[in-house]
Length: 272
Image (cartoon, rainbow, N blue to C red; front, side):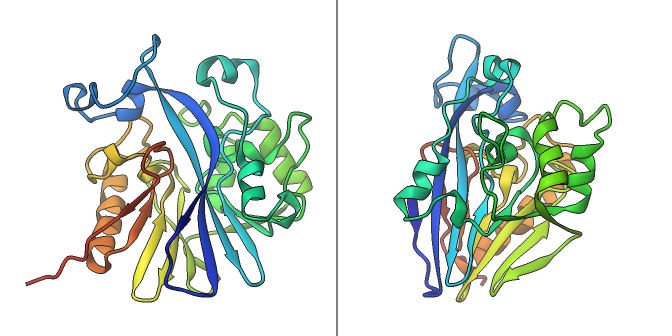
C-alpha cells in the first residue's frame, strides 16, 4: 500500500497491490527493443517477467471508490498455468486503510481484461464487492459479453461478466463522466475499445490512472507500447496528451503493473 500525496483535503488516495503475476516479456515490452531492457528486468525460465497488479483507492467523505481489482483468486487451471498469479492481496490492502469489501461503494474498471477485472469474484465464484456499483464503458462491456475473434482471448472472464450482468449494479457510460467532484472518467482508445482512465484534479495539477496505457516505467514514452494494443496509433495519441498534461502541471501518473515504481511524479515544464 502506498499513500499518494494530494493537496485536496476532501479525499485520500492509495495505491493498493492485488498481488503479482507472470507475463510474457516479449509481449509486455512490445516494440521496445530487447537490447534496451533485457538487463533491467529479471526473466524466468519461460522468458516471463513478474508484474504487479496495482489498483487505486479513492476515499471521499461519502464514497469509497476502487479502480481495478487485479486477477483475483477465481482463476481457471489454464490461467494459473500461464500467468502463475499470486493469491490476491487486495482485501488485505483494503484492511490496512480501515476498509473491507463491504465498504466499497463504486468500482471503476479501466477495462475488463482478466488482470484488471478478475478480483471481483472469490474462489466460490461469489461476488466480493456486493455493495458496489460498477462503472464501465458501454462498448467495453459489450465487447466482453460478445467478443469477436480478435478480442476473444483477451476477454476470458465468462463467469465474471455473467455475474456483473445478472447480479450487480452496473452503470454503463459512453465517454466522459464526473463521478465525484474533480474525479473524472475519460474513454481512451488504443489498448481496448473501451478502456477508460481516471483523472483526479488536484488543485492546480492532476493525477492519472490510465490502466494499460502505462503499465510500467518502460512504457512512459508515448511510442513504447505492448503487443496487446488494438491500435498503436490511437494509444500513442492518447498517451501523448496525458504526458503533455502531466508535464504542464507537474502531475502524477499511477502505473498499472510496475512492481517497483507505482507512482511517477512529473516535473513542471514551463514553456518559453
